Every structure is written in C-alpha cells, then in structure tokens.
Length: 248
Length: 217
Image 1 (tube, rainbow over the protein chains, first blue to last red):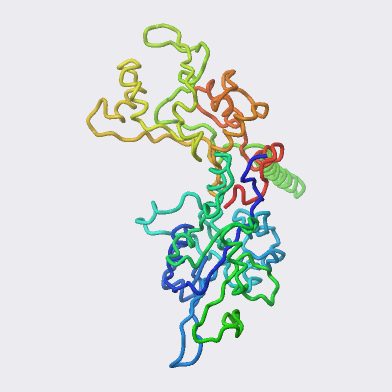
Image 2 (image 1 turned 135 degrees about the horizontal axis):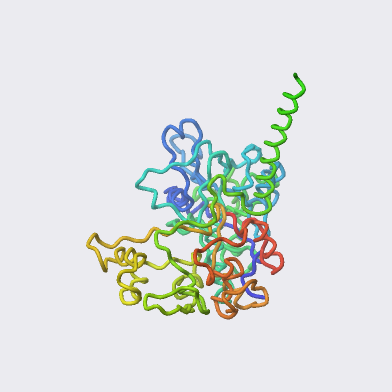
C-alpha cells in the first residue's frame, strides 16, 4: 500500500472572513488558473458571466454607521449537495475525496443543478469560449476548456491536487499539509482562504475549523459544506454576543 | 407499377440504415472506419523509421554502403525523455536529432536533408522545428499522465502486454502495453483503441482509481 492513496483525503477549505479585505485577487487567480472565459460587459449585463469564486460585498448597519463586509463564495462542495441528485446523467457527484465533481464530458446541459444550488456557484456556458489572440498561450493546459452547453463550477483546483498527489506517490511520501494550494488560496494576500485535508486532525484547516467562530453558509438547508467560514470579529460588538451572529 | 418502386425504396432505406448501423457498431467496438478522415497513420514531414532507431533485430533495409541494416536498439526514453517524469512523453527537438545526424547518415539522403535543413546544418533559412503529426490522440477532457503509468508497469512487469522487440525490462519495456511494438513499425500507428473502456478495465484490474475525477477535470 503506497502513501497518498486516492480517496484518503477529505479536501476542504476554511475561509476566515475576518481576514478578507475584498481585494478580489482570488477571483483573478481563479479566472487565470481555470481557463474561465472573459466576462465582457455584455455578458455581465445579461447575467451570463462566469466566476467560480466571487467576493460578495454587503453593508452592515445603516448610513453613516455602515460597515463594508466581504465574503468570498465558491462552490461549497456540500456533502449533501442539492445539485447532485437532480442531474439526470450523473455528471455531478460526490467523490471519495470530499469533492463535488463536475464531469464535463458527461454533462448534457440541463441546468437542473444550477437551479438546485442555493449558493449560485454553478455556471452554464452559453457560448463557445473565446479568448483574444494575445491570451491564447496563457491558457492552463491542465484544465479542460469547457465547450458550449455544459455546466462548470469550482473544482477545488483538482488538477493541482492530482499534480501534488502524483509527485507524493512518486516520492513515496504523504502529501504534506499545505502542499496542495488552490489558485485562490495561494493568491490570497491575507491568508483568508486556507485549503487542506480535513481527514488529518493535525492539518491547519482541521485546527482552524475548531475555532468557535466557525459556521457554514445557509446552514438551515443542511447541505453540510466542505467550506467552513470563520465569522468576522467586530470590535464594536461585545464579546460573547454571539460570534457567528454577523454572518446572516 | 407501385410495388417495384416501393421495393426499391425499401431496399434503399434498408441499405442506408445498414451503412449507418455498420458505422456506429464499428465505431463503438473499435475505431470508426476512416470515411470521415480518422486515419490512424499520418504522413509525417520526415519519413522517420522507428525500426532503425528502436529495433533490436536485423532489418530488411539496406544502408547507403550496401549493407543490411541492424536496428540500433535505442531505449524509448533516449528520445522521449520526459516520459518517466511528466505527462507528455515528449518529442525531441530537431537539434537533438542533429546531434547524431549531422554526422550519421548519407549526405544525399533526402529525408535527412529535411532534418538537417530544419536544424540549420544545411540551407540558410534558419532553424525551424519539424511539424510532426500526433498519432495517439486523447480528447481534451481526458488528463493522461505518462509518469505514474510507466512507474506502475515498471514495478509490475506481469501487467505489461505485448513487447517492444522482446524488451520487457525498464521504462522502455512497458510502452508496448498501450503503444504496441513500435520498434517494428516503419510508420507509427495506433494499435490499441485507447478508449475509456480500455482505460477503466486496466484501472479496475490493477486497483487504480476509477473515480471520474481521476482523469476528467
């Protein structure tokens, strides 16, 4: 039995909202890493833009005491994913590594999954993706270019996971904690995004999610996401007034 | 009057359906018949003989000095250098070929002249890479990496199918499992279907992951 065996990990992410400064570096990194088509003004206006991760901005309080808040949202890789059972061709499913997988070549584009997803992180390719000539050599060869008519979403940078697990198996070692970083987490300047293995109790993310600030998005739906959020710390709020109260 | 017309029409329909069915069935079982341009061999810009370079046997090929040639028996990894470490096996740059071929091979050899011209040894139009045609293609939605396959088969020689001219040891001995005996091919052709069913069968037999996301991402 070699180490770094397939299925021995439960990949997940811990997002420390308190550290997020809303810089959108994760969004750019994701767009570049995953061959996402350019979101032209025309597409954004028609609500057809594709963005596997987005930073939502919202206001807390009323003017003039309003505070700007940011929260990065990507596919939550739910254990009980609403998108999975509705797919008629089994193109999206939960694999043994804790990831919600989108199989592009199976997808027939019914868009049921996008309607089922409460986080709105699934995107449909309404057009064949095109890039300007100057960007053609910038495409990532490790990521499939999704053609017209299929869904796509955050893959937890599965190509990076594969690359790291391959080199770990080749060297006969376990994948070191922090060796696998998604494009967004490696781009985050404040380490608000943290990627790692929840199966390892000593990993950074496993320790982080024990923080009492932890919560999951839209918890009431019972989707059991693999993306855990740590709530914003507000200096104006009294300690003990409900740490997770600010996320709704 | 009406009956023969109907009969001919019916026959025509049956004939067309038969052709379509035959095309679908052959495409399903093996490779589609090359009516739509799915040829398995390609005319390469240089008539490169794998036999001369990789074979270990006497060849039915006569060298410029009139003697019968013998295969050089080069290891596959001698030219396909990245096959044991990376996703792609790699085709050597033309300068790599020229390392030997600026000396080896007759000066008036037409094929080698193309190579030497490309390597800027003869001619004066600057070095240009040779536009080799890819023979083994996989769709864009499949991620195949040579490295783990070479590593596994090298460690488990009992799983190796076919042989490369009798070689069964080392990284070169395992290539034949998917590529056939390339050392005996004057022009490389695809011998295995390399369809998903073949991949999954082998993965299942050898305890490799059959999760979709192992290859499709």
